[in-house]
Image (cartoon, rainbow, N blue to C red; front, side, top):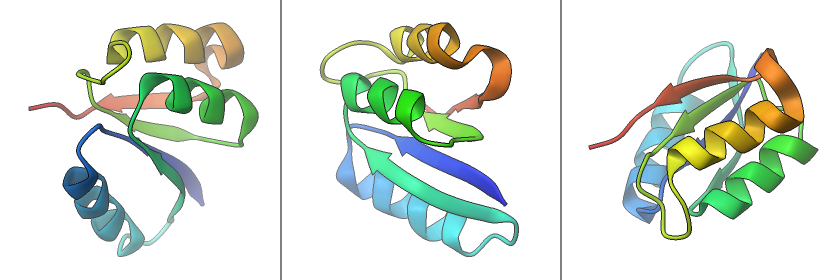
Length: 84
C-alpha cells in the first residue's frame, strides 16, 4: 500500500482528493492537512510514501514543506505537486 498524505488549504479540495484516493487500489490515506506546518510535522512523524502537495498554504509555501520533508526523510517520500 502507498501511504498518502494530502496537503491543501482548501477543505473541499482535500475531501475531493481523499475520496478519489480511497477508491484507488493500492493506496491508503494517512491524513489530510491544511497547513505547511501540519504537513511537515505529519510527514516527519508518520510513515508516508507519497505527499500530494499544494503550493499555496496559509503559513508557508509548498516548496518549504518539500524542503522540510527532504531534511527529515531525504528522498524516502515522493511528492506530487497539485496546485491550481
